Structure formats: structure tokens, C-alpha cells
Image 1 (cartoon, rainbow, N blue to C red):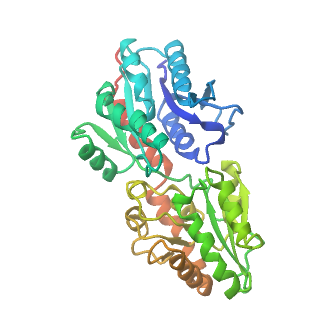
Image 2: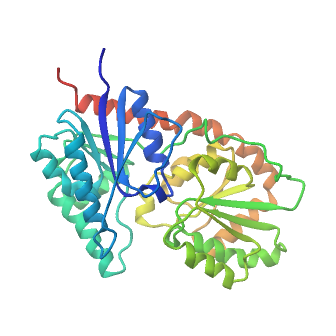
Image 3: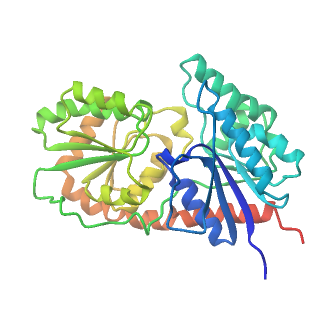
Length: 386
């Protein structure tokens, strides 16, 4: 009887409170379906439970003081890998964990995949500049060749990375974000009645100013006055600017129309989406969003919801020629206000077109499709030797 291949996936982050877990969970399950055993190594005080008992989590500790969290976490992950892995196993890391790659190679762990899914965000402080150098510029420039395989979320990101570091990735795989259409699907909701004037706009994910959420909140000031509070904006998730944006909403006297729910479990998100009339992904025109893959958009599509999108490259690639998308003219508060007002006045027609969005998501963006691309690449790049 053949033995499954063991994959250790390093997530050098606080996984238990990470707003987006689906990338790792869903792709790991696709890898398991392809005949692999998968263990996710991360930091977590509260163990995260999935419905797939085959997916394992290995939580390691870290010294969470004096900016030593990431270094101590990587050190403990390295020790755990050396204790639990064999030379034939596969280790998946991102650029944040590249500094452990030379030690892994020293101890004969040669099957290392470097998976790049994002770029550093805008730098506006000394600490952020130092972080960029330590966890992006230095490792990518000097340590990337310790990996023996590469993967990227988009081809735009691959090309940008090649340009920045004057290199060429000849052997790689592209696998984008996706959606589990068996989890995210249209659900009946007693709160929806398109004959009434009630309208719920919905966002879920990381709560950050740089994701455009603050500008949508600003847009709600005039919308509240114009439509007498009939348009509500529901924000699900957590993030670095949660408290600041909630306080800003309160100062603008929007607490009755802007609702912050906080973080909810991944499998509860579809029920929250079901209560919405329209969803929004307000990412502004920034470099890090133009090289990304819009996971929330896929989840809204699979749920059969119309969407308001900004005209950035990843949005246009997904939403072009589809009438379930309302486009903003830009990423200023007035741009969001105009798009929301249009969606409100056309809510019945958009609800009908939104129902067809699911077919597009199921055909093109299912997680199993993306996970199979990665599984096939791993099998080809790191073949088992008997």
C-alpha cells in the first residue's frame, strides 16, 4: 500500500485570528484530495478546527514582546520542522519564512516551495521599512535560490518580482485565489425583500484603511441623509484599523447605518453574505492590489450576489462584461457614493443578474481547480524516489 506524501505548510503568522484562512484551508484540502497529507505550521493560542479531520495543525509558540515575535516564531517553526519532517517531505514557505530555508537545506530538506502571494504594502515608518528589508528585500535577493520550486498568485506578481530582483523564474506554477462553492452558495434570507426600501451593503475581510473601507464609510454620510438611513453598510472582520474606523464611524454619527460585527468563523460567512443586497470590494488603485487575486469577489459571486467593484486590474479581469458588477469611477468617497446609489436604485435588476454570478465562479474559480494546479506541480517538481 502506497504512503501519502507529507506536506508541511509554513504560515508565519497568528493563524487563529487571521481573517482569511480559506487560502490555506481550502488549498490544503485540495492537496489532501490529490493524495497528500498536509500539516499547517503557525502560531495560535486557540486551535482552529476544520470540518476535514485529515488536515492537521501544528501550533508553535513565540516570544511576543520587543518586536521579536516573527523571529522567535520562525525559530520555533524551524525546530518543529527539523523534528517532524523527513528529507523526502515537501515544505511550503512564503518570503517571510525564507530565512529558515538555508538551514532546512543544510539538514537535507531540499523539497522547498517558495509561494509568493503578495508584496509589501506602502512604507510609511522606519519599522515598516525595516520589515520590508528583513522579510522581503533581503530574503528575496539573497535567499530565494534555496527554494527548489516557486509559485505565484498571479502572473503580474511574477513579472513584477522578476523585474524588482533582476531574475527569471523558469520553473513555477500560478494558482490564484478561489472559492468553495459548496460552502459559499445562494441562501434564502428572510431579511431580503426587494419591494421595500431597505438595502444592505456588505464587506468582509481584513479591516484596513488601505483597503478603501474608510472611504466607503465617508460616502455613507451623504447617503444616510439622502436616503434617510435606508442604506446600511455591514462590515464583517477584524484588522489593524478596526478600532480607528469604528471610532470614525461613531464620530460621523453613522452607528445606526454602519455596523461592525467583528470576526466571525469562516463557515459562518456565507450566512452573513446571504443577508446582503449587494457586496462591495473597495480596493483602491494601489500596487499591492493590482498584483493580487480578489478572493472576496469570488465568494460574493459564488453566493449569487451583485457587487460594487473598483476598476483595478484584478477586478476588471474577473468582472469584465458581466452585468452583476457595478463599477466605481475611482476610489474617492464620491465614487463609492455614486455606485452605491446606482445599486440601490437598480437593486431588483441587480439581484437577478447576481444570481448568474455563481455559474462563473463555479466554472472558473473553484478552490479545487486552483489546488489541483498546485498539487500537480508539486508532484512533478518533487517526485517521490523509491
